[in-house]
Length: 559
Image (cartoon, rainbow, N blue to C red; front, side, top):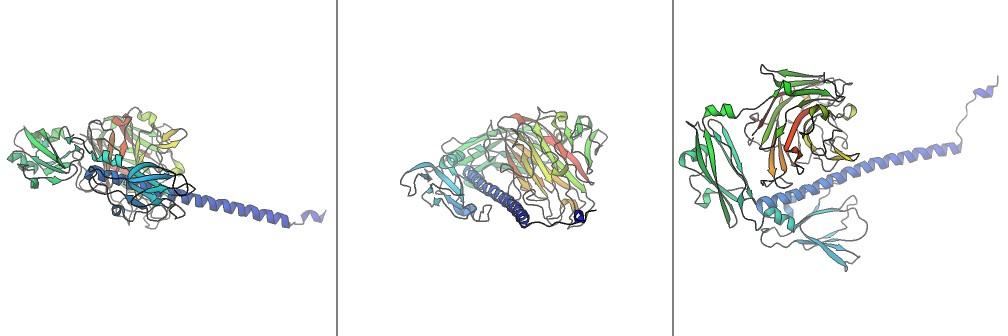
């Protein structure tokens, strides 16, 4: 037998050099990938910060007819942790012939050849990754020079803020009617004008004024309150008999004044119970499905004696598909629609420093009524944990996403903020269509934690997975807004303001708008195609856990 057959052979010098070169190339590629991901995240945060500044500018213009000074945005940072450069025009009354900041495009190095792009009210600029401002900006102009740079800039033009402020437009109260007053209950009515008024006053006869806590006269300036809209809120006394009463509402803006007269029904307490009652899902209108279209065996429904679903529990396993609960009936958006439910997790690991696997996320989905529940699907499952990911409703749906994790440090790219609830519009482009996709990978999707479209469970030091409490969640949908910041209403407004409260107190009465606390999160949804004028809703769940989750005391009300 040849002994050489068993001898070992080492690497030659050339082979070693080749192996080291391959390892070096792979290391460089990996570093480049990581660096690219960090740069992408920083750019996304920068764009979100700039967008927030422009939204705040629009809101200030609409509510106060002023351009906020640069100090209003103090210490706003980009994705690289550096302060944005903010340049604002004169913050005097927008309607008093303000002069904007010229945006000048320089066509050569000394800007001797240039053109004015527009006159801006507010300009926000980031120095980008290199930290060097290539744009020249001061209180008189902003100059864009040729050449390569990674600065990011965005602005709101003077014409835009003038439109938001409604300069020159006649002042008009656009609220057509206010809700009836029911004795022995909390009462809330919200009244809007276009453009937004600066001061308001409501008056009525002495008895009506006492019931609603409003004035008997609006003749003195002290009778008016400063606000862009007017809210009548009080606990209505018991009313002896039905009647219709007259309420006058006056709005002031600069030298303009307008008045609206409302005929408001007043009802005794006995009528309340018949006309204002929250609804539950009837078992006959509920469809439980799996991703593949089968029956969702891991979701158990609980009902009362009237066949109404009072709660449902999801018992997932590592191998299970995503499952969903759809409500078959459709909603017509004719007024405020409110929802209430409580979340209880049955998590088995109570270690506050758990390193266990993530709990499955879930979403409350709102989709155009043209999609039937049996055809809507349940979305992705498995490692994505989305539950609703990949669903597509023509870009017109929206998901109220709930992501829950044990207390641990998550990868900032895939889960920038654990334990959150966020509005996720179905607008993520994929394969030539728009889909619902969480984890906030697109700048158009609310990005936790610095976005108003995101809320956090409380208390922060103990997340929902590590207690046994029932956590209340309330959602309100307010239709009829006329622009993308949802600050002004109009008769043909196609924007819907979605308000969310998390861990709220005494917020289960869905028959009234909830005004006790500021919303935990809000989102202004574009309904320009009007497909969401009629919608359906449901819950869809991921499938990566041996633990259970319960949705309890589910209620809804459509005014």
